[in-house]
Length: 256
Image (cartoon, rainbow, N blue to C red):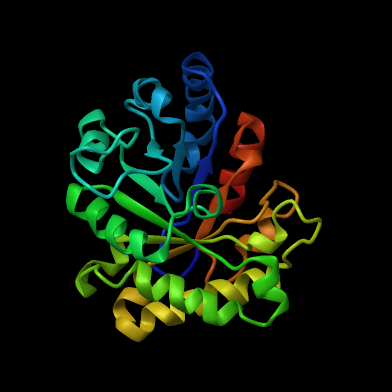
């Protein structure tokens, strides 16, 4: 256990993978494997919308939380294809990933849009996981801090100061996703420490309590090193969250 009051958090983002049956089987197998760590680590999976109910059924009575991968900003209305925060709460979902780099890149999600989505999630009773991170071009141009400052400040702008610690921020080094470049544990800690400092500009107490996750190709063989960073409170895991053994190993690493 770490000395600070922030519980480690391991979140598996399944992206566009797993049918309802595969989801049920995964959660049923995962839950007993992470049960012993539940006193020390929060664990969540993020299935596709159509598999949320199956995940929630399988997770009932266990320590596994279920999050959605995105949501619309409006509570209801003429928004074809969108799912609202109150709908997710109605299903029983605990939280929602917002502003993932793939949604920013492929679906045009902007910081201005996310500034509305984050408080909308909070107000509905969901835990928002705000994703931030710079591209390869921005990294190479020395603009990491400028980009993160904009994403964090705007994404949290409309969140009441006293509720900042209820948001989770996940840093994704977009430049290290599918490029062959790997972020070192030092680079991960540097970025997460900067994110925490940005929150501290609003509230020192909020910065001490907000959980900041690392989201760049975390695997069982590098997890311990990355999670050792003093500002690293866990991970938003992509590919390694699709196999029960791998994800359980990551949760065990976080518990240590």
